[in-house]
Length: 81
Image (cartoon, rainbow, N blue to C red; front, side, top):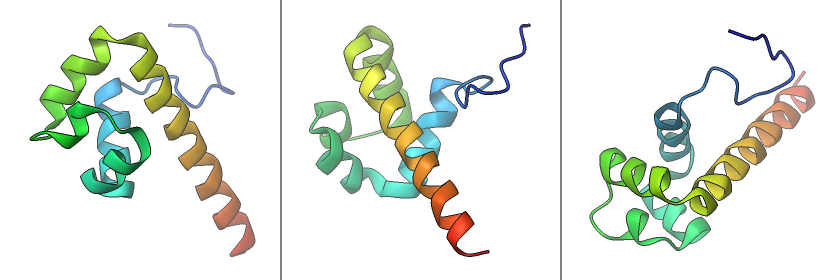
């Protein structure tokens, strides 16, 4: 496996990313951010994964939000030091 130290998505599965987003924003927060039915109508990790794997545009948006969340967490940690 190729090393990618500067890629925050390296080694992360879509399921891991989705779980972290749910922990951080909650399902309600994800509905507000994405306005996708997989988050709105009886949300579950399994159903969201199925949708995101079929729709690259949706997966791209979720990964983009995940990267944004990581950036905000890093900034917050730096300011608390």
